[in-house]
Length: 282
Image 1 (spheres, rainbow, N blue to C red):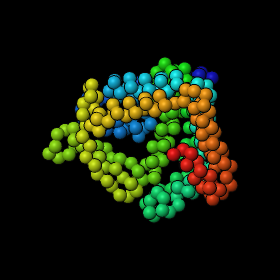
Image 2: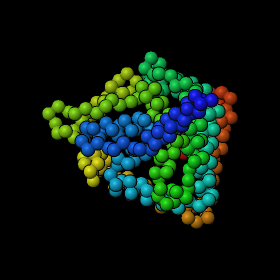
Image 3: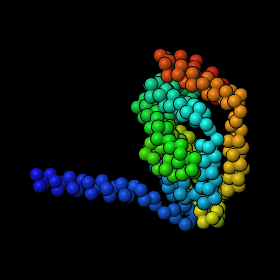
Image 4: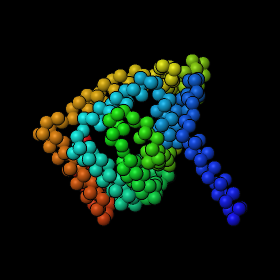
């Protein structure tokens, strides 16, 4: 009995240490190359909280503000309709995982031959649906209204969903190698090698320092416009009864198509329901 108690004590201590370690996000490095590869590593690990913490403070403030405004702009009907749409999508991924995995492996999508595409298993698609369902169920509207986005980013459901999305991307042959400096160029100019199947694509990415954080220069140039456009899109959310009714009707139509895809008994039925859904969505 003493040995069992001692073993349980060690196990409890290990679990507590593991939890404590998980909560401590690594400090972003200061150099351009190390910062770039740190961001890449955080993204591949699905560590949204550490990735968010590595952004410039003005970027984080913009995101907090946008999330807060979006949560405040939606009344109960709009909020639950959007949440229901995501839950329907999660159920569809779970129920149709086998058909969807077959669809992803059909030629010529997404690569010309099967030899350049590592098969996505039904199990992977099913996990994606269940992790999405978990993340949606844990959405804390009150926290988002207050701009406390960190509580959502650190949730296990969100992290698991991001991890699975990135793993599926790598499994399908789409990933990026660690950044490396461009010979003869400034330290903040780097090569980024993307892989699409078996075909490498090399791009040059220039980084810039914003408030002590290194971010791609294109991010820095585009960020004010992206944040402004996002805010204007939120402002366009319907405020009168007629606009709300039209918005909710469109969501209801999309949810109806998703349910048809969920109930499809063959790949042909699934694709027949997919096209009207894309028309409503786009």
